[in-house]
Image: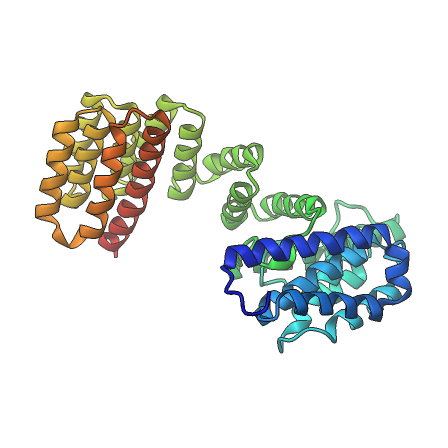
Length: 398
């Protein structure tokens, strides 16, 4: 492989294959791996460097993190903290980046968390609680579970009295997350083979956060982001129901509700959300844009004309209105009108030539005899409108 110029996609695929090969070996020979960790890690690094001589330091270290978690996860000694420390030392000495300990500490901390060793898990995870919402909620979870153990030790203390120190730390951690607002699902170390335990912890703490701090909107916002990322429609719906009750005037939830209605092909429901947005945000253009987008999907001229008139009245940028005009003609199969409007768009907005060229190709596919090409053209058109309008409306609002 030395000397070959591989694309990032090919490298990613080949790394995944090597990862699977080692994972399979670890599952079949876990005891053998445990008995001589330096030899195993040395063999792994030799194979990695031989197959990928030009691999980046980041990918190199990420690969070690992934294999380390697999070693810990497959081992019968994973409840032995001394063993975990040995794995940690062997993995860490092979890494390249200056902050190499972060990845290994996260991997070890997650394994301890999965094992239920919450005290030791905290030692490894608490420094990184602001890097990702899932690490932050995991740290809060460790404190919370340890708080339950506090009360078990002292049965005279009742749960309806003042929370213990550990629960107060859990609450403080969750409240701090609302201030820091860390991203979610951004760390490579979270891409583990079986993330179910981490998902369960995340959701438990998010709903505890909602219970503890009912006025904090961030818990629902980050929950919605994670639900979208993990394609958890049931949880998304549940969060939107909570959000629409507590924060019914908030644009974030109404926007998400609108998209959920569209996904469920509930046009009447989506129209209701648009009307609510227009009433609550009369000076904003986004609700009108969402109405125009809905009318494209319905392809009803009277509905489209109504939202178009409103868009003109409220000062929607001319380029957006004309883009919707030609899109409506395309979706209603009016080829002559659509091609004419593309030409007009080109004359009026020559600085968007890069987009106009793409529109001509999309338009040509709209009138193809190939049904697959037509479907792809519709998706490409709607996706491009979303990107174009979102960017232009953002500029206008700034």
